[in-house]
Length: 286
Length: 282
Image (cartoon, rainbow over all chains, first blue to last red; front, top):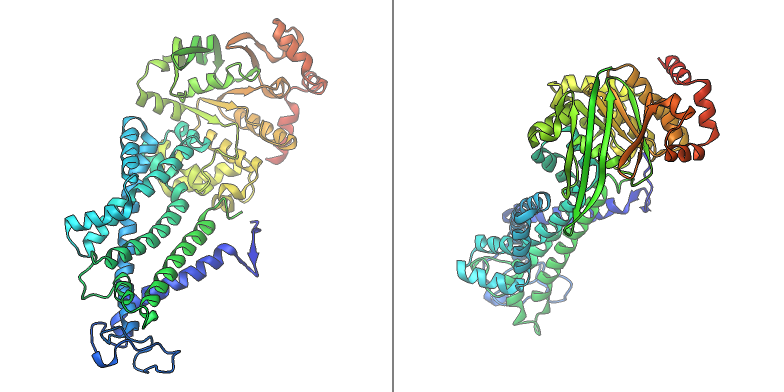
């Protein structure tokens, strides 16, 4: 097998992206799963005397609070770790559900065409003409706050991303010679769709899915920033930004650290997806 | 001899923006059991459309306006979709033009051959895998077990065409349609593939419709040759008499453009070369 392509040392750039992105995502997963054991404090435990303490690099740093505290004296590190829980649940569940819904509709629309395709495609057009953030805020406002509402809102809004891309890709694959071969061999329509076409769009799906996980984290942050996510007694990154915003002149880190967490996790998901695609795609493996 | 395929007065048209373009205008063609029948013509003469009509994979805008395709005595244009699909897939196979794109890029070679066997020969997975191995061996692929685990992109064009030939012959069909099976290959590989097709065909009861634009290639392996021009079969003769006494003006001009090498080759040793080489192999 010929393994040329861009390389860094003995690793391809795809592998590097997977390792970098994957390790950040893994770190996030560990933080989220083992939050009660890792977090040095209860994220809700207040200590009003030690409010707005600076992080470890400052001279007034308190060794009990590695990344400092917020205005109510709650440990910022613990709150960030618990925030990763919400972010990760939303990222995985919402993105996966959106992917399943969008992919199924996209596959059917692309492969069977006709009235079904027209209906779905127009629906996607109309859907995408709404401002997504506004739509999600309205949706959550209507169905009520809570983790499941956030997930539903993201699925309802973002299935169109998958649907559109999958449909376009199915249209391309459907015209390929190997599909004609499959038809002459006598494979049924569903078999062809499931066994011939779907595997060919999996690399694309993985990229889309991980991109969507990044987007889901951002949407969750937006919703918790405006107070429409989980109840305010749970730590979320968006909620932390919202609280930190008020003290940004006295204690900039309270707002900046969750922003960095969001940036790092979104970048990690994107790198992971992009890297996986280039490794998984047998045509690109050449 | 009894014929396996009989096309009578086939008219085919493509409708585009309410305009009907005639693709085939009255094609008559018959293929005997076990014969290799060449179909030669310019691009645009309707060769591939005829192949698609037989296989039942015509594009959506195309329809048969008149005529019939009798396969084994039955008019297959009158069957419903499902019966047609079954008949065409079980009893008629295809060797496609472009081996590079005719295998699914993300599925292993072995699985793609097994699919056909499991679907039509009622084999379970294990039997199909064994049969696949012997099929790949028959198309002279070395180390078939290794190749079965490979993806199409790991094989050369010639190897892929061998795999596709194995798939075509796997269910022992009554008819195989080879639509320019060597056009996309190197000249050296072309020759091997031609010999392979010829060899496999001789060892089975399969009839073969060999489509090409190259009279020289067709002359090497075909028993009879039909010449197509603008949607019609203008001449049909045995290979020898076609080269000696071409009847139609178009055939004569085709012959003039065919290289001398093939004509010489044809007249001195019609089949012996292919047979001899393969006996060496076996």
